[in-house]
Length: 226
Image 1 (cartoon, one colour):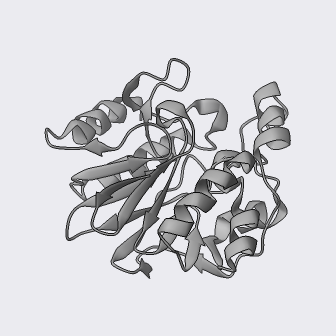
Image 2: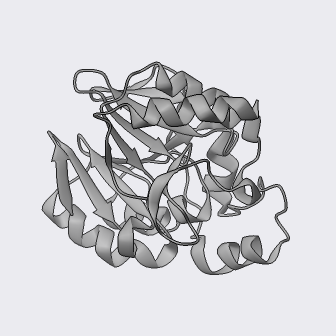
């Protein structure tokens, strides 16, 4: 576990930051795959949390939400369009093809049990000093979290900072086979660009200190796909 900035911690759950979760002001954001719980539990014994929120309910983000919420007796939050997947554990049903071999693998080996959602999150809701930003596209109810005072953005899978095949660092759109609406996702990235984020935390890939506006340059290139 690494401290990124005040009250924000990064928990890498796979080598080379392949899957990540975060603690932001006492809220656990995402929970990796279902065998990630040992690493998360160790982190939460160091940095206690009072709630757990999902950027979205895909298998590599809700995998041990039920275990963590039950173990620590904390509530689960997500966008209303993610509730059915978060509560049922059927985490791949919004994939373009939920029957392809990768989707079936993820559902069987990565997705965790469903867990009741206590609160739904929508645009401009706040968790501490973080504002909820609706960023649909990768999934229908995908959300991001932004703290204006220091420009830190939890982006989920609206973009990745690694090539998921090679694990090389670099900004990419999320893979199409896991993305319900690619054009909506690019529109969400344009929305995030205007926040001028200074530190960006991804579901996949290392944290980006956006000193040279790499993120804005990347989003500008993505607009050509619209």
